[in-house]
Image (cartoon, rainbow, N blue to C red; front, side):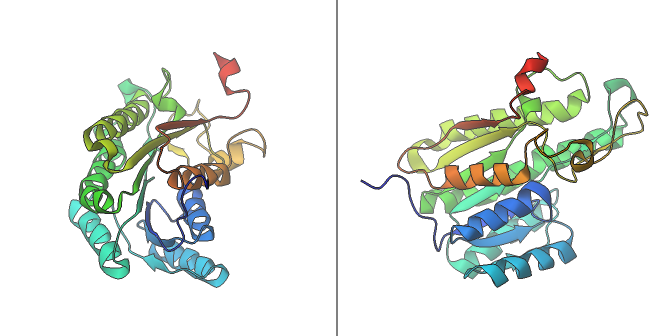
Length: 252
């Protein structure tokens, strides 16, 4: 008996697709035969990614510039995907950011920015996508974080948004029951251009791709491969998947 399911010809929406985990996830899903809808604010990067995907795969990559903090834009994103391809089979809630550092010095602006992107954005996308994922018996993927599993002394607010992501994902899974698969993937530090925007001089705010050498942190391609894996599971599902560098837990 064949294990899992093909996603060839399926439709996937990826938020935060302009770089890092999102871009690699879009490439990975396209490699598996899925049409991909690329969502992020940087349209020029989305266009370049779409061209790259379509030149290497027999799939369609649609660009929908989206600010996930704007619920109207998110609703348009999902509607556009369904109208263009006829269904929605996979949503990857990936868009996220970090700003500031300790609670005492965190500005209200940075606090609200993290909450809007990391929490509101995932809520808006999930709410808009649920009816379509239910219809297709699809897969809803949340990109969480190691920071949402263990106490984090640096930037507790960012960590709290990732605890929220994990709790929201699991509670949505309980609500939808067997209608669709819901997975949260928790990577440790990933070697991307992701960086913490902070004025704290004691903290290295350089992008993770500059802070870590290959092999010292998780690669974005590894997270993308994990997304592909969970999207092809059927009739079972992966509820939660942790992806750490091998020495991560020795820090505790």
